[in-house]
Amino acid sequence: MIGSARPSGRLLLACAVLFTALPRPIAGAQSLFDVEARLAPQYLQYQVHAPADETIAEFALPLFVSIPAGSRLSFDIGSAYASARVTAGAVHSEISGLTDTEIRGSYTLGGDFIVLTAGVSLPTGTSSVTLDQLLAAGRIGNDFLAFPVSNMGTGLAATGGVAVAHPIGDWSIGAGLAMRRSRAYDPFDVPGESFRYRPGNEVRVRLGGDHPLAAGRLALGITYAAFGRDDAEGSAYNTGDRVIAQGVLTGLVGTHDYTVAVYNVFRAPGEYASGEQAGRENVANMFLSLGLHVRSTVIEPSLELRHWLQHVFDVPAPGGVATERAQSSRLATVAVRASARVGVLQLFPSAGYTLLGRLATEDANGVRVTADLTGFHVGLTMRAAP
Image (cartoon, rainbow, N blue to C red; front, side, top):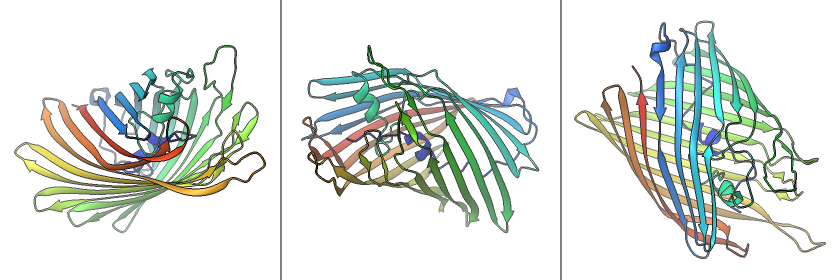
């Protein structure tokens, strides 16, 4: 299988560049006229070659709006439309529609040193999938492939958190604590059958630091995500807690900007609802880019390297003992992004190609194999602000 039991790709990979434990400085009085909106249509496709022979593609259209309500209070609203399709020989699986809508409010206290957040995830997306949609829904939830939209919906949920920050010398040090509680929902839409799933509570603890370095900055962070036991029709299980480490270094080479960003996501061992063991796994990623200033635009070529190490347990014969073994996947992606301003719009077109990829997966008969992996993506991020 290449899908994870508890998809969380968007949240985990966002930690590579977003250090939410560090409150942002107050920029003076703001009003509803300072609303900022971002729209980012993108298309991503992977081709898993023989012996798997599978094509996985997704079109995603995320929309994010930030609404300030004064100098200390702000609201964020985000949702997306997504359409995913998997083709494997004569098998076709497709799922499309709106995702859940995330609404979050942030309030800053104490001269920008304390930030309180509260949010709700409204079930506007599809949390129940049919058997025909199951393959596509599972493939986009894979943390290694990192699709823009990793799930269509997970039901009603609420989050709350607090972050504190304080300067220590040239460093800005921050820490944050957040909790997410989700309601039960039916993950499968099968006529005549009912399967109730209640996710366990999620608690995240973050620690981060930010420091000026030469002509740029260095940001470091680590997050521990603890998950309560999920309940699937009375069967309690936990697929493993996560530890996420990330770092970003920015600076100048002559007159050009560079970025080095790394992250590592480690998942501890756990178990699936079936009672089978879930081995530990690790996703490591490195991103390198150089921003070339050409007149009024910036051209940013980049290279991204990713490695996925899994410890899996082969299903034993009746009465046998499961044996653990390691398998790995990797990919390299070369890409280019540009930026330009047109009126109130900031445009970021991008394109990339994935090469030299290898993916540990299964063939049509369920046999574990390793196959070559290639792919491409195109996108256009549009940011509108006064």
